[in-house]
Amino acid sequence: MARTETNNLETSPVQGITFSLKPTPHFEIDGRQVAVIVTKSARAKKMKLKIRSNGSVELVLPKRASLKRGYEFVVSEKVWVARMVQNVEPSVAFAPGISLPILGIPHTLSHAPEMRRGVWQEDGNIFVSGEIAHFPRRLRDWIKREAKQILIRKVDYYAEKIDKPVRRITIRDQKSRWGSCSSAGNLNFSWRLLLMPEKVMSYIVAHEVAHLEHMNHSQEFWELVESLCPDMEESKHWLKMNGTSLHKYDTTI
Ligand SMILES: [Zn+2]
Image 1 (cartoon, rainbow, N blue to C red):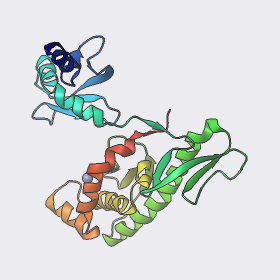
Image 2: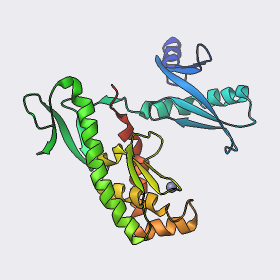
Image 3: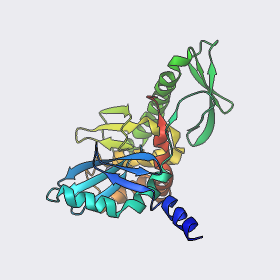
């Protein structure tokens, strides 16, 4: 009986985690390798652990903290790491049969090899014509184009409200942010915004456009965002709960 209990303990999540520095820092969690990446931050006051969207762990070290203490911290948080990593969804490649949300509504990806229509949306499907090898790229290009059309409309709408000129709108795949605004008045957005419910997309646009007026996150900034987007709290909550899962779609695999 005691032996069984010991065995149970050995296979419990806490016991099934090891940390090693070689060949590169990583955890092994129930047979799964989880990389630990160290970054130094001049702004960070305390050591911090983050789970990246690809499931690796990032240790953020304040400038003066030692690497040795950093790794001690990582090891002391191994139970938390194991729990968080388990929540990271595995990557999903764009392929026929996959469900992909467009403006928050699930669509099924379908291949139409015999057609010569590019990519189109019909009855809850996204059809992609041509050779299967080009399927992911064609779909991503289509998403970028669709996202850009909608985003331009929304940017114009909010920019006009606050009477600020916009220089250029670029669609990218920045994993770290949904959107950004440069002091020159250029706005960047992730194509993944097309996957979100439209009002969440609107909130992100209102947020970036508001940065044309306030290049910070001051109280005045948030008041401006709220005046443009009265239900921003709901969208912020949606992003907190669902944002990471939009990163599981990987167009490079
Ligand atoms: Zn911001």
